[in-house]
Image (cartoon, one colour):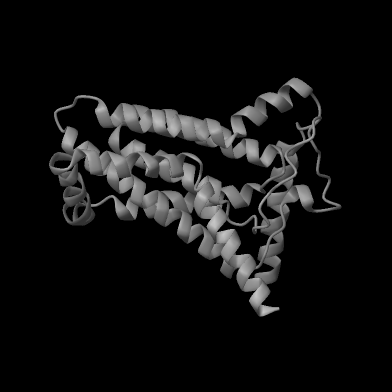
Length: 241
């Protein structure tokens, strides 16, 4: 019975995938536009710009807003770790673009040939951007709505190119939202965010010297951490062999 239910879910996932990916490879301009919307650079620039706007915008509860933004950064890291944990523990799922016989449509240009050999389920990119969306929503409803629209477009773009099935991005989004809501609470604010923000007043050079590189790493969707993780995995794989 469980296998039948799983089979039905996979069938629905494939139908939704064909609905979105079916537009790919029909129009070169559309492929390039979607490629720009999917780019990690755009996600990073949008994140840093939104974060900076909310951080420096004058408000009556500016300190509390900054505390929420600090917790958002922590939530993003934890969300990424949780997503990678699920991906490593659950059965490996090949990306649609590398799966033969499913009716995948490729774009009309040659995409970057490098993609990490990680399981497609869940999508860690969806996890991160929906963690961002949730955090910004808790700080500003207006920015939350903007980010909700942006995040939906971004994950649809990944499905459009066959990087993920719809189920991959939905699972990732749920992780990002859930972890962020769990982190953004009064206990975490008083015990973690308040002491960290106190460093901004007492030692601003040190605080911003650490904040800006950390924002850079988040804006690249943890490219440096991914590289370390990949290197360690390769070393461990060599040891096992």
